[in-house]
Amino acid sequence: MATLGFIDYKDASPEVRAVYDDIMTTRKTDYINNFWRALAHDPATLKRTWESVKQIMAPGALDPLTKEMVYLAVSATNQCGYCIASHTAAARKAGMTDAQFAELMAVVGMASETNRMVSGYQVEIDDRFKV
Image (cartoon, rainbow, N blue to C red; front, side):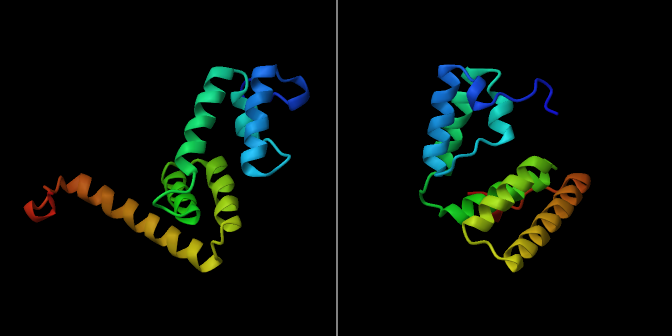
């Protein structure tokens, strides 16, 4: 259970319902997931976070699948089980295949391993890599 529990739509303040309505409209769903329901205890944080996510994850120079896969990679690196589940589902909805998922996790694992080695060895950045 979330630390403060969840706020369901029927129990939400008008301010929270407005954000929930925007989430459902934007995502074309009738479902508010647990993350948003937990954040609803702080309506200002709920609104600010939703506005940021909505802006960042909107179509842009990166297509929706790429954005979801990047989000999934960062979530795996940060070991956020909730975000891994959520963004795996979203990436699959955007077209991610099992092969893409497996390859993404291989890249995440390799990057994590080599990042730790670079940090441990305190490797200086090559001049030709600096732009």
